[in-house]
Amino acid sequence: MEVSLLRMYTARVNHPITIRKPRFTPNSGPCTAESTYVHIEKWRNRPLQGDYYPYVYVDGIYLRRNWGGEFENVAILVAIAVNEDGYREVLGAAEGMKEDKASWINFFQWLRGRGLDGVKLIVGDKCLGMLEAVGEVFPEAKYQRCTVHFYRNVFSVTPRSKVKLVAKMLKAIHAQESKKAAREKARAVVEELCSMKLKEAAKKVEDSIEETLTYCDFPSEHWTRIRTNNVIERLNREIRRRTRVVGSFPDGNSALMLVCARLRHVAGSQWGNKKYMNMKHLEAAIEDASIAG
Image (cartoon, rainbow, N blue to C red; front, side, top):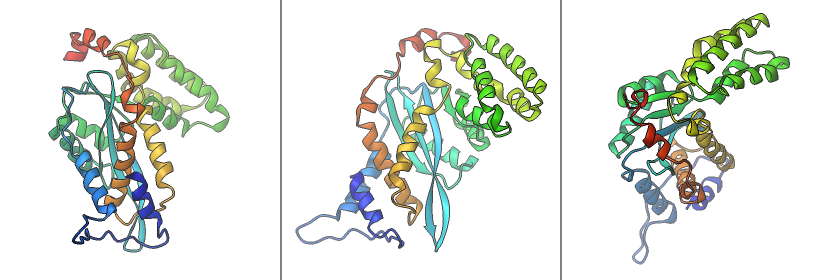
């Protein structure tokens, strides 16, 4: 299925691609590309089968499309989750145009309408529109800023010669055994960054460290897997590798279909069939007011 889409998009790489309506003959069904679209769209809008999805990871992947002879980026919003049994599951993907509040609200409401429930934590990069949308659609859920993206943000104002040292300092914060200890370590790091005359980096740490420590409210056995959205970043890298051969898409829907084809393939592989977490730890902690409340 994914291969048929790739062949269609790469057949005329240097020319816009027009998606035609299904062609029928007396003895045949619709053409392969169109039937592929139908199957993918059915999978994309399927009802979610899990009773609840405690951990949800979200991200946006940007692909190029050709619109009226001009190239522009189109955002595909992607969400995966760890279900109540501890298995990873692709929840869905949708075209967002750009990662603004309206796009994220529509995306989250679409997921909720298909059965997304019981969300305790949403992990993602810091995006103001996404944060506001989480508060509106999933007010009971907490937000964890991906620590890897946080590090990159600090590195953006750090001289290259000092990045390795600063990285070691930041990782030491998230290596602590409690939120209290992590906060204390963060204060020490801020002071040290100031002494190194890295005031911009110090301010970024001081202003944003708290939203990177939400994982501490959950079972320590899960910490390494819920403080970053690496699980979805790996999927995005694979998607980029697959879509690079296309170059640009004729429209956002074409980009969405190819992304979904890849996600569907991955979901049916060992990736989705291998247990990712032991959820008994969360079940035991669910009575804790810091999570249940």
